[in-house]
Image 1 (tube, rainbow, N blue to C red):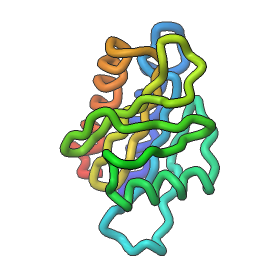
Image 2 (cartoon, rainbow, N blue to C red; image 1 turned 135 degrees about the vertical axis):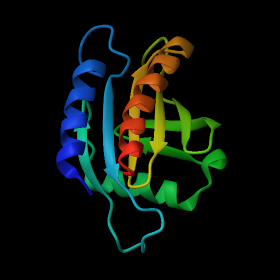
Image 3 (tube, one colour; image 1 turned 135 degrees about the horizontal axis):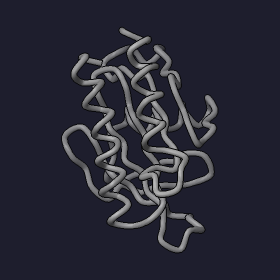
Length: 147
């Protein structure tokens, strides 16, 4: 695995997509995840920006991913609970159930060969489209390196 490439790509991607006014994302987490590995192999947070996830929260999310019951379960990230709204080949979208934002909040979760990218955004359909484009751009960079 080329961790130097991932670090550089993450830093460049975060700079253009998080943190400033008008950015498509409010937070993102990059998780090292091997769905084919043994369950004793722990997933780790490689990068995170705009959110502080802790190991217990990460374990709950990874357990949710491993169970594969995406359409019938919810998942929790930070203090928010999400329900899946659409499922695709290597990604899914979710909406926050307990948001305090008038326009809502959502998450785009994309899986590559070695990582899970969680991109969080505020807003509705337009915001979701912008978040999806931003997440897809980073996931594509990882996929080109077979990561």
